[in-house]
Length: 289
Length: 323
Image (cartoon, rainbow over all chains, first blue to last red; front, side, top):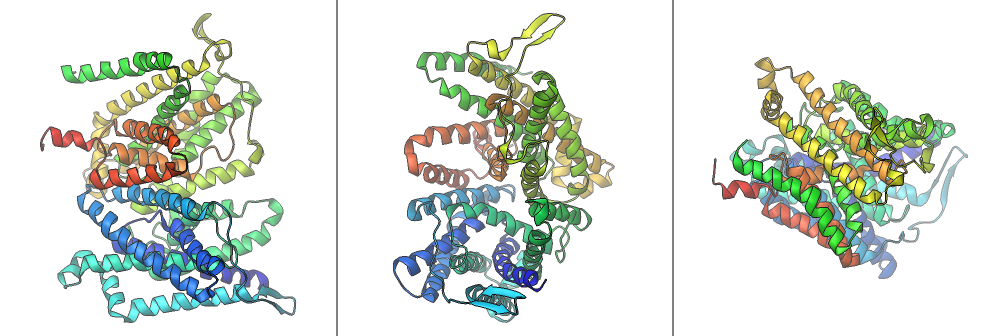
């Protein structure tokens, strides 16, 4: 039982970090970022390139992922989403754009990094063994701690910094924020960059454990959608809750349902649909976003 | 029907049923038949997605119904020996019935929430197909017979596909006919009372409910029609490839259906057809670019979005001036 909980926490910390980026972008711009999973893969490959090919320390790779993805996010917002949002008649048009960007990133990743599975060597060696009740490699613990630290840092940033306050105002009411003198364009760009950066960071963290490959983008996006549906779209606390809940469900499900074959995700999906039929806005979401 | 419109319809029919076979016969590019058949079938499924867009819902779950329809048809044919032509409407009706059950709760959701649930639905369909015994798991159902003879009172209407010299042409004609019928129905729906009611849902659901429109029934009805088209297209796909696997229709396909609608234009009945043709055929033609195929394709997609965010058919608006 302790093992299951520990696994759940470890998975949940990563998931929450992915969901945070997605929900941030959604709350600021009302854009469902289909390319989130691809951004995550891209971040992983940047870390791989810096660490495994250039031979620099892991932390440099992580930093490089964050910077590259933040710049990419800012450029995507400024030159792609902003003009399309201004010109299109229906909000949903951005979904086509987001899907196009997802394909584009897939193509870029394929050309730059190839289709092979890539990983970097372990950051720390050794396995924690607590009385045979919890067995977990140290590098997983390190990644989980780093992920939780990043989540806490992100919350503090959103809560107390000037930029964070501006973004929260923007998420609450775009027009009101603009009337109060918030530079909407600027903070949308920063928000998108921050969301992309979080995706890149998770990619960089996970490349040390599970490795990374081209095909991981799409399924990661679907999982991230799940998490923000559980918690409620566009709510930061909801994204964190959703991430941890999905991590726990996966961990518990894989153990309990193992004897019935590969049905964990089927059970999770069906549960989610029933849950959403009763509470459409998720745990903490506002009705109708 | 006004003259230019009549001329347009005639030109379309002439192009699809006469010109295409003629040109393919002359150039000898028989592989285009398969591509164009796929375009026709995908545009049938996309027509369903478009109808859900029309009531203001983003549907990324059409792949689920295509898969479901395919499996219904495959199971009926291989295990119960039902004729293909009978399984076709059955697959559609089965999907419509399931969509009513699923739609009743989830159609209460809106915007991104509905979009995400339908996206998950595609995954549910795939995983269910993997888990159920009747679908034969990951191995799928293979060696499904070609469509047999259809006859009424001893008169052969459609000959047995297996005896045909050129089943590719037969499949193409069938798919094209189905596509024409689908868009005829869609056009009829949009220009009827039902279409007006759907438009009122798209604009403001609360307002239309307050004037007395039965919004709950209406959106389930639109969703059921949409799923019917999805199931139909899936069933024919199975007949063409003679096999079905849980991965025959995945999230990617569901997203593609949505993209076809966007690209063609959400405000135009024939938008999804044009979108499917451009995207699917374009993708096929781009295969000469080898490893840069996806790069060029997605680059073009993004560029199109920047230039024409309201779909390709919005070009017509500008030509005719503001209404």
